[in-house]
Image (cartoon, rainbow, N blue to C red; front, side, top):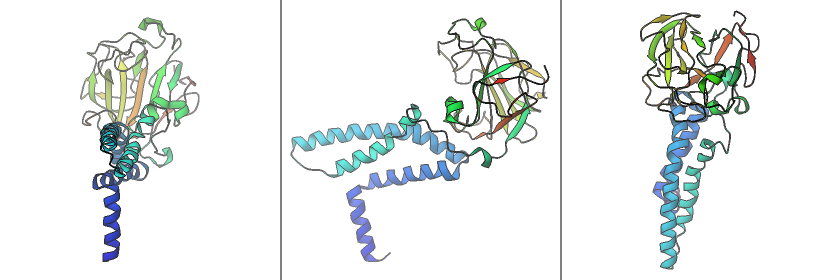
Length: 303
């Protein structure tokens, strides 16, 4: 770089500020990771953009408001405060996605993600897709996070009744079958089921069974099982059709349902459930599309 270009760069940095310049580079790198690198790096970048940087932005706005008031009192003009304010707004912006004001799915195209897997359906009777599919419209609460990009919530009639009694929901205490051949890496059922519509949860996942899939070496996660209902333990081998537990209302849930999703990383080794890469999950042996969408009724061909 010649001297003239160095001088221009130094002047530009002095106007923007070193800290602002670093923050801009970080934000650009995070968005590049999300849209082009993907994988675990993309998952971490997404979490930072949506949950950490907005906090830094809010603190920056408060600090700059104080500095602005001081500059007004002292009758001193400080143009850098406007630059600081704009940079902090850029940091805050992703909070609109976290709040679902801007509904944006984690930008991972289903056709370009491997391995996808097709598995057996986890129920033996008519089931309704509460949330499922590839789009925000069909799967809003899941597609906004990398780990749950293609997750499903399953319910059965009656559901969404508003009742505060778990027994009033059709899927309550229904048997859940293993969808795959694999090894159980985690099995837990000591958490109490909560009352529907209370959201007074203890953990995000609640009672659960996690399986390492023989075919791919990836992981199938089944959450919100009934307290004391899990029939397998860590280290057990399971095959499609084996009963692994019953549907409950444990964890972060508004009513009894089964949450199921497929991810690349071992869920027992990630620091937080959202810090993983979700993978496509399809079902065979059902009357309908292999990736059923919200509101669709799924009828297993073998009941």
